[in-house]
Amino acid sequence: MLKALTLSGSVRAASSNSRLAKAIGEKLMEEGVDVTNIDLLNFPLELFNEDSEAANGEPDAAVELAKMFAEADIIFIASPEYNGSVSPLLKNTIDWISRQKTGPYKNATFGIGAASPGKMGGVGGLGHLREILNKLGALVVPLTLGVGNSFNAFAPNGDFREDMVGRRADNMVKQLLNIRRS
Ligand SMILES: Cc1cc2nc3c(=O)[nH]c(=O)nc-3n(C[C@H](O)[C@H](O)[C@H](O)COP(=O)(O)O)c2cc1C
Image (cartoon, rainbow, N blue to C red):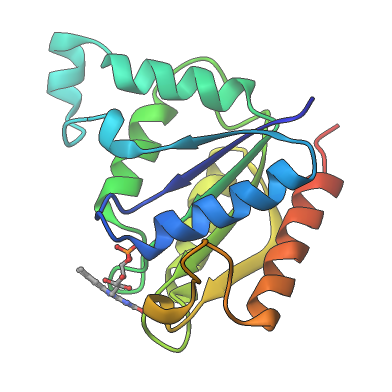
């Protein structure tokens, strides 16, 4: 059985990116994938500092996340757009994981998406996220999934309200399932 992780670069209680991550997770589960939704609140990491790393070693949260990444077949990241880029929480998490020697970015197929109250759906930050993941040796599927008007984009049951967004989310899942590393 394929294993997937979904995670959100926002830990805000009402985060629309967390909703997006969960919605993709639901669709993957419908396809028979074993999905774990990661809540970064459960993986607290200090702001990366090489002196602190040298003095204290690798934090448990980074070691655990790197292990989960290395063992996953699929990883979907919902990334809020902060001033045209990724959130500091997501970048800090990616950087800590990148310090682990377990090849955390080299196994899974990655999908990236964003949700934003704006019309563009936060896709302005996804170019940076793609570049960062590519630099780390990750395979990222071509589709970038933007969910605009995010405060009204999800029904109470977590489904996408707009059919067109739902179809793009289905395409994301198709790409994640069909594009495998060899
Ligand atoms: C520091 C900061 C910068 C932001 N910059 C952008 C931006 O460049 N583009 C955009 O669409 N939304 C921007 N936003 C609004 C976020 O898209 C919005 O807060 C969104 O709800 C965050 O995701 P979340 O709901 O998952 O927490 C910004 C928000 C913050 C706090």
